[in-house]
Length: 603
Image (cartoon, rainbow, N blue to C red; front, side):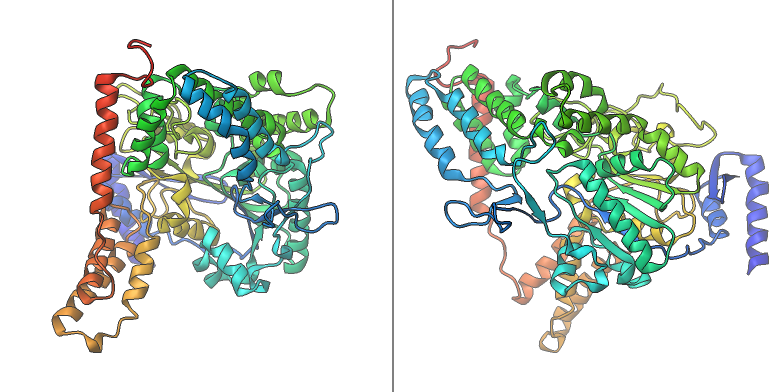
């Protein structure tokens, strides 16, 4: 077999010397070997000659994203604090006591609507939001205003967790295939307060790494920072710039250089343009196929345009003043390019909080250089990110993103076109010009990211739906298990791929297999098995074809309805409401204009 593979590879190389069209690269210990090939088939043959060697098993630690750990506020006795209705006061999910907000806002809101001018509404809105969020803030001395307790699972491996705990962890990060192959004793879930102190969190991470090394007898660990976990990794890497305890770093949509949304909100740059207010903001936040956003577009016209603008800006200002600007982890989401402007507004010199935040900013600026040090010292670094979507419409932005984080941040420095555009036919790849590192859709130049040969891009991948993309999870698993892997070593995981949310499809297939086929007719059984087979075929493919997953889901749902295991969905009411409110919103925008009902034309 080896001789045959060598012969095939030799033929490919000879042919490639003549054709010289493309390249395939293989990762080695200290470099990337490049083989020129003529076409995709030849590339596949060349790659098949390079089996991926399995890596030694090192314990892996997940550093989760925002809100992926329950957090409870404590009272003066160290017990879970309760609100006035006896409910636990949680830090995450963010606990807001509604009644005081309503009491503060109701009278000024009604008066302002009735008289069509601000009669205390802005002051009341600021007070209501500020008081609702202030409990999350930190003091200037660097201490939190309130103490919080995080569900930490005792720093135990998944093997030691209860089934309920495992279910929660796997729901957040479904690495079941990974633990099936290396054992649950080799996976840990590091939890932290998403609204906490980055360097206290880093201290806890350092303690867990030491504990894991001692328990497993390994000298290094793998880290898997996800989303906000990327900011925690920035802090950790700043404290350990040589990576002495790390074997692999596998970033998944990391906030490596913050999120433009957070930075712009803190700067008060809310999108209050005509289209932003009356067409885009609420429809895109809620979903353009949901009638609710279009209804809000109509309802907000009850306030004069300028009052509506001031109201939205006031809410954002109160949120920033009360919490965003006074929580260290939220500064971890500030893009480095926006830091100086925000520091001038919000940071107080000669305070502990200021020193901590500036320390993180320094680590943020040095992050990519520190990662290069890691690589020189043998740490293997990988990145998985999404692109192709607009940022949430609270802010005006034309940057490429995954809705939550701009893609230049999650990709560790790749170059992107404006969202929904391309880099242009005259664009020239900036680095590594002997390789083709431009995405097929023309939106990405991967050559400028920190690790172009170990960075994967998923087009139109929603940040919040990443865990439902089974290909992302499978790719991360292969990266952790293989000794060396790059974007050319496995053709089933191309550098540029698509997106799919396959969670429902997987559940439908599992359910379909529980159906007793002895109760079905031959024709019914044939339809059910065909739907199962098609669903499994879709899931088996790791090169994503747009629409295949949704079509396979629908096929299974249709079979369930036909067999009587599910009622047909009646979406008529929602569809009618969508048409009515969308039409009303668009007619008002185009003919009445972008203004409140009481505003004079041209306002």
